[in-house]
Each structure stands twice: as C-alpha cells, then as structure tokens.
Image 1 (cartoon, rainbow, N blue to C red):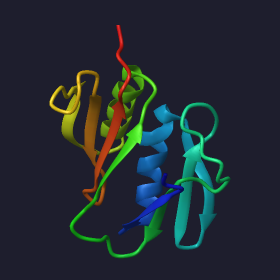
Image 2: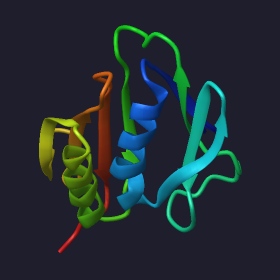
Image 3: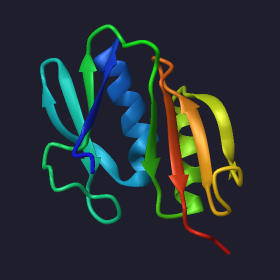
Amino acid sequence: MLDHIGIRVSNLERSKDFYRAALRPLNYVLRKEIPFAAGFGVVDGYGKSPDPAGDFWLIEEDPQGPRVHIAFSASSHQQVDAFFAAARAAGGISNGAPGLRPEYHAHYYAAFILDPDRYNIEVVCHIAQP
C-alpha cells in the first residue's frame, strides 16, 4: 500500500492552482505547504489518508521524464465526470474523456487529463453504476 507520492513540477503556484480545482470533486484540498512543496489530501470520506499532510505532493523542481501516470480513485462515475470538467476548466488537456474502459474490466470508468507539466492524471471508478 502506498502512503504518499510526489511529482516534480516546473511552477509550484501554477500546479497548486490546477490541482486545487481539478481534485476538488474528489474532496482533495491543500493540506500542507512548505517553501518548495505542497501536499494535498482528502478532507473526509472516501480515500482519506491517515497522513495529516496529505498523500499527493508537488515539489518545485525540473519535472522528471518520462512523465509518470498517476490514477486517483473515485467513488462514482459522477466524481470522474466532475474531475474531468474541473480539470479542463483549470487548463488541463484531455487525454481521454470520461467513459467505460472495458479492456481493463467491465466496470472500469475513467477520465484522463494532462496537467500543466504534461503528467497523465487519471481518475477511475471501479464500481458498477446504474
């Protein structure tokens, strides 16, 4: 089980603004700031980490290459859709609109966004929805 993950970003303020908006539908908020980094975590409910500083970190340095793929878990298709809309409104580039991905499994519902540093960010729900 992972406790936290961090990515290197070229502009911390820009990335904080993007992730504040994009992850809001998943109940993520900025939990901790230090001069060169910021930690995000779920406020309450589905996906809440026991780490009070957050489980997703941004570190201001030259981005690593090749860019990694990070997938956040959602509790519903509606959360996936809301993430995609919020991330697009915040300047993210579509890398796969919300929808079923049956090549992974019958209930795999996901959306993909390229963030400001072109990391491939996914939000996925594994639960069958009516």
